[in-house]
Image 1 (cartoon, rainbow, N blue to C red):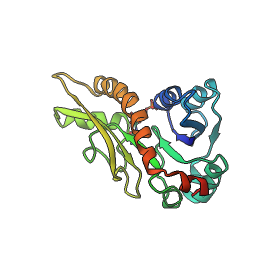
Image 2: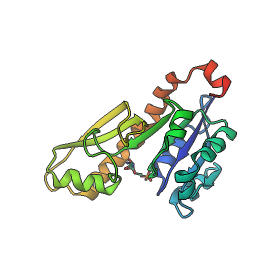
Image 3: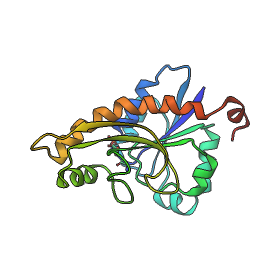
Amino acid sequence: MTNIAILASGNGTNAEHIARTFEGSREINVAIAVSNRADAGVIGRMNRLGISVEHVPDNVWRENPGEIVGLLRRHKVDLIVLAGFLKYIDPVIIDAFPKRILNIHPSLLPAYGGPGMYGARVHRAVVEAGEKLSGVTVHFVSAEVDGGDIILQKSVELVPGETAKSLEAKIHPLEYEIYPEAIALSLIHISEPTRRRGI
Ligand code: GAR
């Protein structure tokens, strides 16, 4: 069984979709959700699904990432899944979970990624640039924001008159489709012996 932790800062529709997809799975267990915001929509969504949520405030992510590693280890987490999580992931956490942290980004990376590019801002930039194509990327998290190896991408066409809102409405269902698939694919990087050692 692979234990995953879902990290989310906002509404949490991806988090909910992932949790529902793997409900009853014999391979993947959502062990915990973590949010940096006490008022995030994701908290209610996870509570309703019976998944425990920890609130870890902003200063801890910045000043004491080792505490977060400890929390994840206590919950025997094998894989960390960022689902609309807007804090920088400190190298201390990346080093503790090599190739075990995934992120979803609502564009075809490397386009429209990097610091400050998230959610609606990405869609606005894509529409304003007159792009014909956008999409979703799931990638491993590295020290460079949105810069890690890509696991899966899926594209969507923009139509004349497309707005940031309408593009977002097209992108979300694509996210729900590819994130569980990318999570399942990433499991090949987590070998049994390594997991047993708890590394
Ligand atoms: C998603 O569109 C996700 O791709 C994006 O935040 C949204 C969260 O939605 N993430 C980023 O922009 C990361 N740079 P949700 O809270 O409804 O899952």
